[in-house]
Image (tube, rainbow, N blue to C red):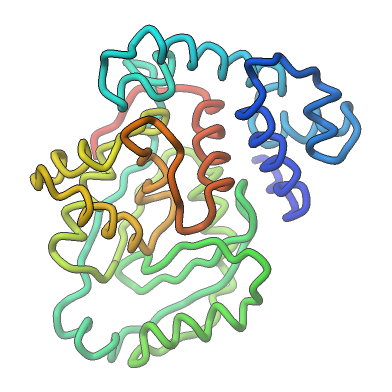
Length: 283
C-alpha cells in the first residue's frame, strides 16, 4: 500500500496540478512543472508518480486528450464533455459501495443525545483529514488544513452537543482504507433534510472520472429546476470524497467552488483521472 504524502508534499502536487491545468496547451516541460511545485524535476517526477501512479508528462497528455474530446463533444452535455471520453464507459473506476443511513429525527433534535462518536485525523492523498464515526457509520469526513485535532474535536462537539465523543486511534487506518484500500463498503450516518439526502444519493450515482452540473444533478435527484437548492445541498455535504460533491462543475464546465478549496477539488478530479480502471459496481 502506498505511503500517504506529507502535507507539504501534497501542497506541491496541488500547485503543480493547478499549473498544468492552466498551461497544458503550452506543453510545459517537466522542469517548468517542477518549478511550479518548488522542487527539482527528478524529485517532482518521483513525488507525482507516488501520488498518482502516472508520470507528470503522461498526466499532461491526458489533459490534452480530454480537452480535445470536450471540443469534439461541444454539443453534448457538460457531464459527457467536461473531461472527455477515456474517463467514462465500461472501464471506468467505481470501486466503492456507499450507502446512506439518515440520523433519526430524535437524534437530530437532541443534538445526538445518546450517540457515541469516535473521531480523529489521518493522512490522505489530499492532505490531512478529519473522520468522525458512530456505531452506525461515518458521520463526518473533511479536510483539516492547519487546524489541530483538538480544534476539530471541539467543532464536532458543537455540532453534536448531546453526543459522547472520544478520540479514535483507528481514524488514520480507516482513512487509508477509504482512499487507498480499493474496493470497500462504507455506510454513512449523516444528518440532513430529506431534500439534502436526495441530492447526496444522486451524487453517489456519478462515477469516478465523470462529472455533472447542478441542473443535471437536480434532474438526477428528481427535482428538475431546483439548481440553486441543489447547490446549497451540495455545499452542506458533511462527508467529503465518499459523497462526491467534487464531481459537480458549473454549467459551462468551469471548476466552481468547493467547501474544502477549489485546488483540492482540482486535485481530486486529477487523481480520479489517473486511477486504474475497473468494471463499475452498483451503488
